[in-house]
Amino acid sequence: MTILQNKFEVEKTNLKIGPYEVCPIPTGIFGLDGGAMFGTVPKVLWEKTNPTDDKNRIQMEARGLLLKAPGCNVLIDTGNGADFVAKYGDKLGNKFAEMYGMDQSGPSLLKSLKAHGLNPEDIHHVIITHFHFDHAGGGVTEKDGKLVPTFPNATYWAQKGNLEVASHPNLREKASYYAANFQPLIDSGVLKLLDGPTQGFIPGISCVISNGHTQSQQIIQVTDGANTLMYCADMVPTSTHVKIPWLMGYDLQPLVLMEEKTKHLGDAADGKWYLFFEHDPYCDAALIERSGHDFAVQKRFWL
Image 1: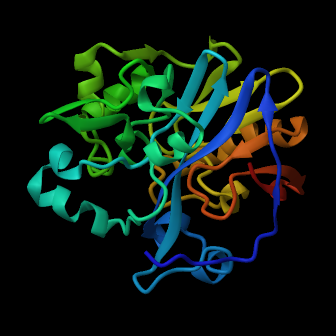
Image 2: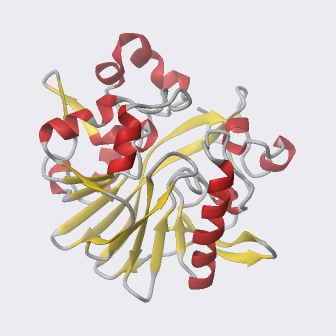
């Protein structure tokens, strides 16, 4: 889709948390309907910062996060991936990229990792926040006619509750959960399941649970005691969504999500945590502040 611009001021900075170098991994621009991405928020408000194309789609990034340390490379989420026909069949696979306005000429998961000197074999851990295709699709690839883990030496981490939902999706989410994005991980024995909030399942890395967007989405927190980053996934997909009532039409439990945002964004504002945005094409991360009973972006960053 055509690359669109907005008017955010974004500062460039480098971030290291404990042993980890924090490296954004853009996997490719795609598009989703702006109305769906902002739910009940009127277009006259959100289109100021998220302009649409001629099909009313807003520009979206599918941004993973590489935590790069000596002897331990951790990747959080994997984007839409590719091999759509092999995964989803001829009928859907052949129109998948067009349907979601995917720009396949720019960054990809493997290109972005290569820019940091890494090949798929160099990744030790892959954390999947939830198994929606735009978060988990890049974790599986087609090789010699078979779907296999993209990262052959990695342990994949996911939530037990989310795998259960992905395996038996409700009608609202049936178009987002596909067995091709998780069954090969199960068959290969690389998938390790967490059951709820977990501290330090990888050194310096923990998770909390958000159920408002989908069941058992894990929100990842990386900390060394001095600096903390929260990988927001679809709890806060873009920096524009830090306002508590700015929710997506895709969110299954809006009131639950508002409560979750109030708590977790409150912790982030008070602790001066970096929020990392998976879907914001205009910045990687931000610091936020309290604004009355709500929150506002204090400063945006490219990392």
